[in-house]
Image (cartoon, rainbow over all chains, first blue to last red; front, top):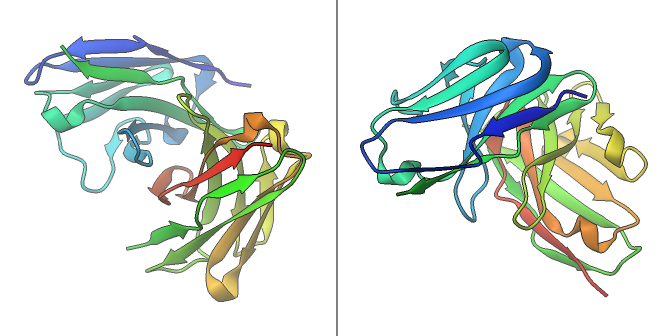
Length: 109
Length: 116
């Protein structure tokens, strides 16, 4: 089973700064099946990025994804107050299906 | 625009089963899959399985293989997730999500509490 490890566990930044979130996989995965989600307290996750670098519908262009193989990055430019949340990376493989990283908490410094 | 609306919160006894529903509106139900993901209190996301209603096929995470049944009723555009032999470790929020090899539309979540 592919294990996804996100770093850092918690990221403390101020509005207006840039956030860089990392996700490493235990083995090479297809970029086509790699995604990032945002989750705010009490809410369902929201798809941000799919196919490693494609923004989902309605996602602002300050969010960008990059990477391939085993190393993937989510970058958030010019942090807005509403961006402070937990972020999960995810990969899909026919077996065992979807696996998620443990999450990175982005908090206000 | 597809929307997914889930059934309400449940409180169950250990050893019992729970069945959560997920009704789709605003789009074709047969053109995609419905995945189920759960989140225990303060924890991360855990995928449980998927159904493709148009094909009637399912795929379950190995962890839940023996306890979960995912089904769908195309006539009502509703998917179901039934989890049996509940323990306190099954206390979680259960989400359904539209599965197009990414989970792009999510239900609001259903809280399931397992307590004696």
